[in-house]
Length: 352
Image (cartoon, rainbow, N blue to C red):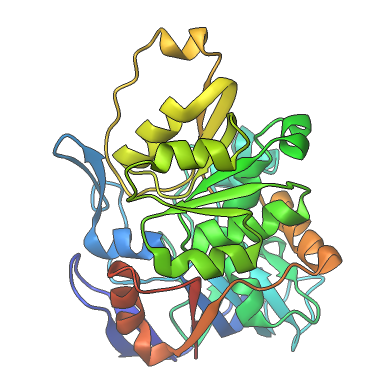
């Protein structure tokens, strides 16, 4: 099989040819049909996250194994299954749930493997991922039947989709149904958030991004207003677009500037949920949080049940696909460079 692997942090991926892996009694071999290119893949390639004030979170310190095949947004066709695998139909297309935990702790046994304190099995992070023509999945419970959905459409829901869906479920349902949602970022995460928020019943969505080239994509996805983050009066435009008061912010960037501005914009009783991992540091006057009854919560991907709910929502509401650029597997390095330069609109998906 052909895979694109990271051998050293800061390096380009290398094309590697190898034999197909042996399939264990509980495992399933998928022929990869689509693998989304996520911003987290850039952090892994660089080898660190920016924690602000000159500090870094090292991937090596987290124990990531190299060489590593990147890619955690995976959809493909089941081509081989172990002797003990039940409920999987060979020749059928599935979405892979990549956020796999230890399987035995309280979080895992309650269905929240994404919150496993010993989470060291996530695909494309600790296990080999989808930048390949085949991938081995450790258990049938991680496969979600996508029916007649195209693999390239389904793949991004394993990360950018369930990340934003899970984050928006952290807002109060009543407030979500009546107030405006401000979304920082019009990349793959932000556009996914807009399309899902519309399907979830949010009537007014304000998208904020410094790149005005993404305005049309944001409006097409369902945004009510697009605000250029680089404008001097951006904060006032955001507040006006949200109807005068900002109660909900979904930060798909996670920079010092977006989080700081978002917290400053929140009305009394408002909440900011951050999923973006751009990096940075903010200073928060501690009295401002209780006096403003403000909420600031991080949200990391989502559970397998939330992923199944999301796929059902996509199919039921016929959520339109965000702008997607299909690229050949051998273009993996080019796709990462395009993403790093900020030139990707929507999602890039590798198609072996």
